[in-house]
Image (cartoon, rainbow, N blue to C red; front, top):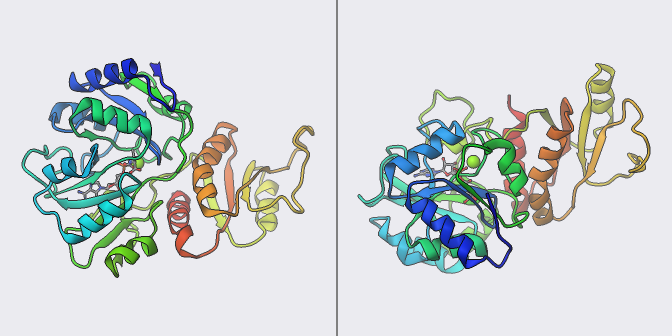
Length: 336
Ligand code: TXA
Ligand code: MG
């Protein structure tokens, strides 16, 4: 394991690139969540990502590159929409799905004829890609179906002993996974809402379609990441509109311990240093600003899981464009 600061140390980045070149696995920070990287053009290395995560082979990976030109080499079509979106949002948290070039091993795309590509913005990810000079396939660095890691400790919790190197760049600023947009269909389809919002995309390329979350494994998969029950904490999560007090009392009467993500501590207050009275929920006050909320959501869920609560009650955020990604992740975390 190695540590690097926000301004990456060249010797550490060289070593990480060498591990990847030799077919190893490197976990690294991006501006969204930590990724678990392998050399994208080495099928065997990519295969070991699926093993380390316990990820089903039918769920394709995002390929990270240093710049747009490198993304174009992995694809056989570069429509005007891709050009406009790359110019506006790269480097940044937007993954584009396009027809794949032959050089991309089919294990990366789970056999699909398309590949998801993105240029990440985090200085450590960028330094790694620029030094490596090859594309890096990287899903989020967590065991399959668990919530994504937003700091190095989260990565170790799930993957210690299963990876060769971890680059610790501190907590990630974005906190939720990238937006995934399918440009191989017309109109373009939003496969996963993320930090770049639907309205921001539509401002660049006009109307896009929102793909519905799938409710079962029986339907054909446009994107397995669309499956409900992805991104789940261990505890049972329930979304509650307005004040969740009534539901929390109910759960506690059943003897369950409860975590509570709420927008204010008004009427819920308990001094931080007071001994926890039995029956008090573990309250985490979440930001009212959507970007700040995204940055903190997974850390809050990881924390409540570590504290061993049985249930997590989440006060529903507003139903507006900038909350779409949060709404999506909470909906999936709720399904069991
Ligand atoms: O922010 C992120 O996107 C992070 C960081 C590490 O870049 N990565 C990430 O990867 O969240 P992962 O594997 O956890 O999610 C990738 C998503 C999945 O929903 C997958 O199904 C979808 O992208 N995907 C990848 N390739 C695809 C393709 N060819 N067609 C449709 N969906 C694809
Ligand atoms: Mg993931």
